[in-house]
Length: 382
Image: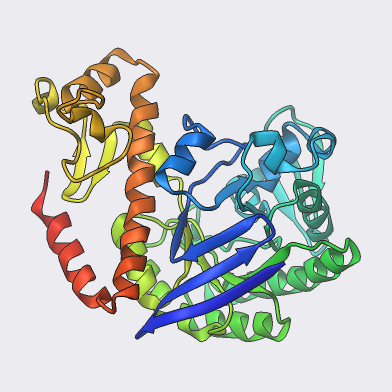
């Protein structure tokens, strides 16, 4: 089941509400990534506390471990990982792309050796739909080929991008057919491909819209292309998708990317950046980015961000329940696991809260003023 209500617009920016089998999601929304059935280092209760509404799982990795039979035993991914709210699952297309030369793509699907144990495996649109049916994810992504920007120094040509995009379209039809055969009550999203070519993106949009899917994603960006190319495609594509259906930008990106994506008409975002950067001591704040490993934080008794209300930052409050930059610096230098856990909580809270502030600005008819203030704050530096 999927119901999307478009509540308000400001030029291309949209405020919406998405109703799914496991709950309601207010959009624009950031979705924390839980590739293996867990958002790394963060308890489900912490995700709920920070206001996360929907999280991701990955079909490819969950297929390999723990495997379909284990997940079937638990009735799907929700009970298995202890998350009762909506879940979106990626189809495995991006992970297949990341295997590089170790996989072989054909019309039928992709043959590859398991990165876990070397077993020979074959992932097809039908298999992806079958796995996602067992996962019982609220949003099911079509199996697609993620078109690379370049391969071993060779930049993908328009002809190559077209062939890849058209293969993804044929796979989309097969996914739709299998999704219907399985009587999956959850929502299937198509994925717009076409590389860095606007005309191919438009052709992909036209063909996918003809399938009348419940929602659409923009894939194949942030795959090694220059930033200006990525932003060009993001600015060009979303508003060409149906206004009455949700739009999802896959795997993007920085706080600036999210705000610009909203301005271009995107409703949903995901990215591993908040947790991956946190594990490397890179923190996002309202006033710019901060690297906790820098020596200047060694004796700093202040919070990461004095305006932040996350479980990490509120420790620098007078009641002593929070954590200082000095303490986080100490944890990082000592390799203590609490360090990346607290950093991940902060970064995810920042992203989730940023989208809450965007929604509030759209509700108030003040999105333009919000964007200006956001840019000024981020440029200030910490």
